[in-house]
Image (tube, rainbow, N blue to C red; front, side, top):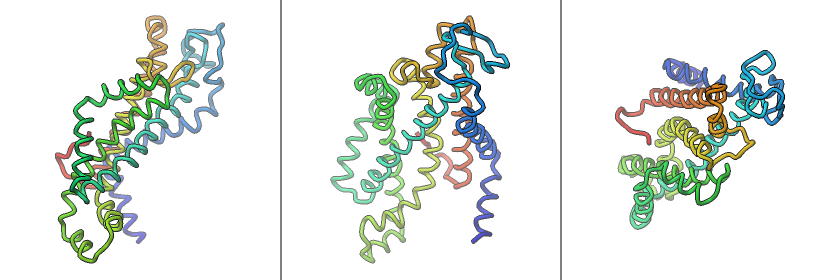
Length: 283
């Protein structure tokens, strides 16, 4: 057993994208859990006497228009942006995967109903639909999570349904049916383990897209509201001062870019590790 685990682990670290992704991910996690401890200022601490300062030994990334420490706000914003991205993906998976499994395996009217709903929602671009839902619900972090989950669960349901349709005609599933196993037992013991690698890869890649969407919604005023230091909201606040002190937008922008790159690399590494078939698209 230990030899098998060791072989799988060594195989996982053979992929350069996976190694780089894990390294960057460790930096992000250290920033989230340790950054607040080493920061010398609070993210909401206002000091008008030191507003719009450049990087220094006192303020590592400088200060914003209210004298707040940019480094402290970047660290605090990491917890919000990355945390909300992970939460949105988890909720989307918990909703979309069971629906996809049941729809693909049972078929019939249930499948037809779910597919009509999914096709109807997918007829709209997901970004536009998320903006519309967030605009209707109102500008705050809870509502943008609701908007993103309502948009993203459909993707998981559709992909999982397609995988189940391909798997349920195979011999091991037919044997399970002949042995009179219940629907839920067949799904839990046979189909779910088969689609799980694809779900993991999709989720890893999707976190980067969701983080971009959260930041975009906050940037246009539909997400985090001042003084919450979400990265997209920080970009919006620093826009008016870009020519005076570009770091107000550069540091949040770099944080978003680095995080999205990290999860894309992790997704690519996991795809290679699980030997996902070439040519499959993850939306």
